[in-house]
Length: 250
Image 1 (cartoon, rainbow, N blue to C red):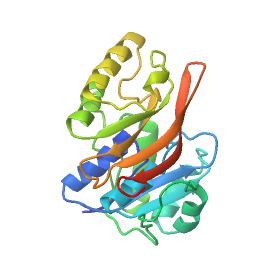
Image 2 (cartoon, rainbow, N blue to C red; image 1 turned 90 degrees about the vertical axis):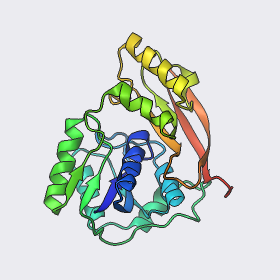
Image 3 (cartoon, rainbow, N blue to C red; image 1 turned 180 degrees about the horizontal axis):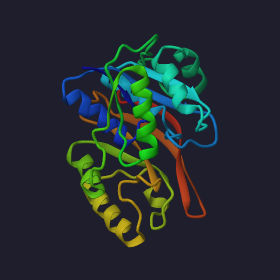
Image 4 (cartoon, helix red, strand yellow; image 1 turned 60 degrees about the vertical axis):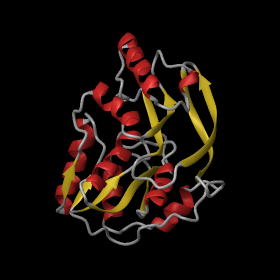
């Protein structure tokens, strides 16, 4: 099975990449939507260049696709990218940060010859139905291996299976500044679950309570070094990344 994985660099899409490889599928590219607008209903916005370093670490070509993030256009932008009707080199040059390592990244160019698209969708019908329709129009299958997994079961699997997940943004009551950039160890996951119960938010972040980036996973040869600054105000915060590189290549 030839597949592409829709990958933001966050926990769910990174897990979907590993899941695809564990099934013995031929992952032709990690596909990342790079949003230039102020918001997106479909795709993670901050830190998505981590997906490019993930692609270099596991030897899979990267396909960055520019989008303004408007609801009417972003899925069509993804479709054009999969069909080879975008310019990955131009999008890479536009979005890749100046201080980030780029020497080992191989960009995919041209139409993707795939049988399916794999995503890390959890419970968003808005996201999944639009992706399923796009895949149907392309004549390929759509897989969402994490669909409707229980939030506690889901978040516990990351440290137990060797994923180094960091929180890159916080938008939930009960989660303070100390969570920004924090590693989701087994201890941190249990604390997160307890806090989610107390403040009544989704422990897996599916409601936008937080976003994540993965700096090490079982399918990655090198871990990712990230340097950034914490930004915090009015109970919300983010990890503004200043540089990124693969271990041993700084």
